[in-house]
Image (cartoon, rainbow, N blue to C red; front, side, top):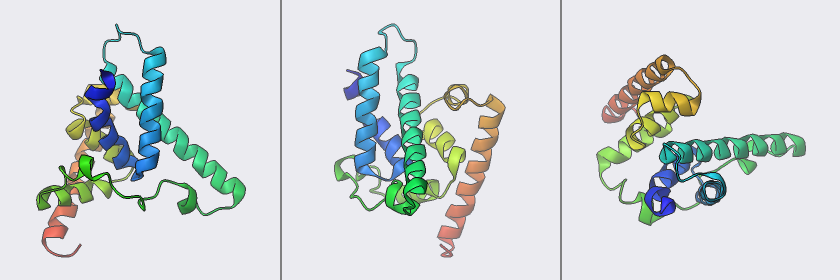
Amino acid sequence: QLYKRYYRELYLYIYSLSSNCTLTDDILQDTFLKAWLSLKDSHTNMRAWLYMVARNLYYNYYKKAKTLASLEAIHTEDVAPVSEYFIKKDVLEEILQKEGTKQLWEAIHHLKGQQKEVILLQYFGDFSQKEIAAMLRLTTGSVKMLAYRAKKELKKYLISYQEGTR
């Protein structure tokens, strides 16, 4: 039931961080396996827990890939998540159909780090700032500031896109 209910939104969230279909599938498989093995039915917010686990698995992978890259003297782009994989059309095509949505999606991908995560969790994950603060281990004030700065960056990006400078 958890898989059917949350797979799509978790897929979009992790894919937006990694831009790699294979990695996204692996992380989600591990996320739902962890849920099956350790999540109690009485857990108060299963959805937030799944997001937090998926996020942590992504960053663990990213740290491990970065360490392997430095140990093996391989370029980071060869090991880190890359966007050369084809996008799963059945999942993302629906979201990216309209030009305005495409521009917004592109603008979100230009955000960095926690600003990107806050926007994704707040607007696409529909989490409150308090829930996001708990997931990212930040204060609510920090989440508010990250959201404010991210929206400012998005606006700047979209205006430059409309003016044709992007």
